[in-house]
Length: 251
Image 1 (spheres, rainbow, N blue to C red):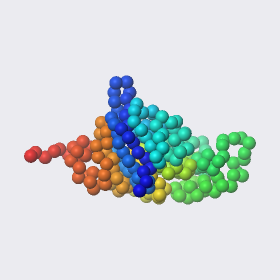
Image 2 (tube, rainbow, N blue to C red):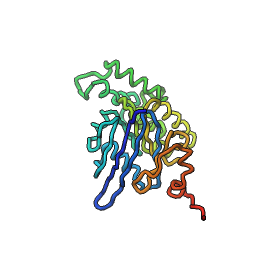
Image 3 (cartoon, rainbow, N blue to C red):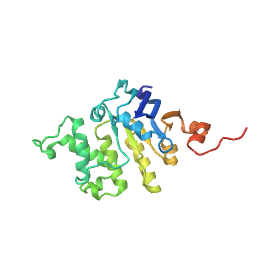
């Protein structure tokens, strides 16, 4: 099985404070991985390093075998990695359809230009329609993104994230702020849109983690202390003590 994403002794230091302390991780193509850990463990910093928002102090990030650490976010995106954020990142004054069409333009070879009439770009329009159906927002086609519910806005962001055809997807707390029913619907949506893709997701809802992930990476104090199947991670005493709140039993 080929490796989609690999971290090699990745480190990030802010001043004298080391946030990521030699993280190592190897994610297989097509695998769904949940990244968990206590608040302040360095999960978002890790995502920032992978996606190019931060440059590492040292270490390597490899995407399909090619080093990407230090590249700009848009360069990494064009190499096939896309990320969503904790805060919904959409175009609020554009419709659902227009948001999705913006997302597909670059991957289809179009550049932002006022010399083209977007309505005449049949391939871009068709792809946007397909994405809209995939995320179940076809009935909201012409609704401004600002007027969608929170869960619908998150679904739209997922659509934009995959619009460019990226094969590695990073989702940062995708179900945060959702009700239980919304969360269950969203898990099904994530499964659908990431089929055949590689997924890394930061998630605090352990029901989502154990229901979605093929493997779980546990980050504590900037290190990956465990990376295994949900069953193995659940039984790992280091994880129980560091994250799940269990106390070690007396000998």
